[in-house]
Image (cartoon, rainbow, N blue to C red; front, side):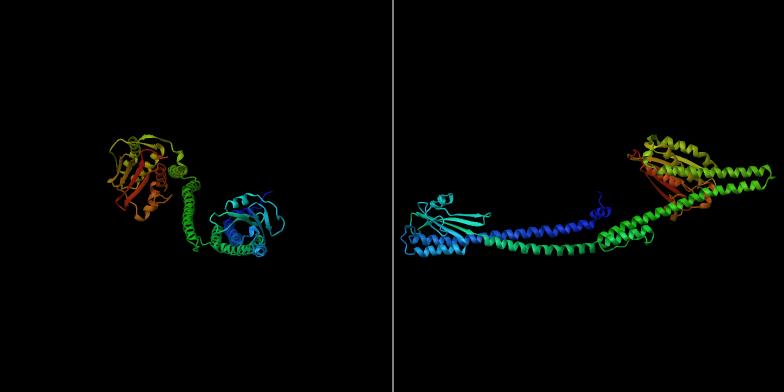
Length: 482
């Protein structure tokens, strides 16, 4: 039979475990304490009874030895017997007197009178030992004492006094105290449980509020910020949650902005194509040159759409895990020479001087395709966003140490405003939207570049002065770090 899910949920809750802890704290110490106190009382009561009886028995043995009772020549014969009878009555016990022939000369119960008794305790007492035993099963204290004349230098044992004393009254007191202890313990446990549960419910109220506020945020009714300041722990949880919530909100805003930008960027060329196509359709007798011009514009818009789609596909591939990297040892010097060779025609059209400076041969473990894409974006941007009066330049510098290789791309271009530096890696972000559209930028190049470099466990930094130029510094490990 399956358990009720709500019961299972309660059994796994902090509330149940705290209640269980209170129960353990309430019951275990109280039970151990009461048992310990009762046991201590019992031992103490038995010890006191033994001391009292032993003291009275010693007085009696002294009187017997000094009165020559064992020789049947005592004037205090009846007095001593009366004392033995009194001890029997007071301590609810039995007194037996044994002579040196192991015969019972007196028994307060008159059961074993004139019988012979030979036991281990009696034999030991005839050798001068005092024997005291406690029988917890039958509830009595038994002692055997030698009867010795204190005035006799030889310490001859005249006989043995056997005395057994009942401890039933002590056991009755123990039962009474146990009942009292149980009542007190149960009362204390109930009070502790009630108080503990009330305290637990009170202490857990902030956690319940925390859960309710999270639920309110989840359903959209909260103020998107947790504020439960009852405990240090709840304050820290709220701080961490609010930080996470802020990051999620930024990511959500970024996602919405990304979707909006993608829609806009993809829609713009399509709109232009539709306008051009409608214009052609509305002019059936237009000259051939106009048709060719419109078709050229449509081709340009299609190329622009294709570039946006390709860049989006590149970003999607970059968002996958680094396990997709095809790592191999690549000659970085030759790779840069090939990239600059491909970009030289663009630099010539822009009248920009393109210079490569390397300080030493460098080989590194990289994904050649992705690194080529990243470096190409940096250098191509440096060329496109440069001066067009023939004085523009782009310097590419390559260096390395024992751990990293360093790539620097400097240009004399238009620069980047300081307030835009922290946004340049965002998707579809453009510093100068009109200029970017004129040169065919999609706003995805630097986002792709940064993703490529991070996938290689590298880093990228930018320094720029508006109107003077921009410098990108890239650092990538020589050996790929898995």
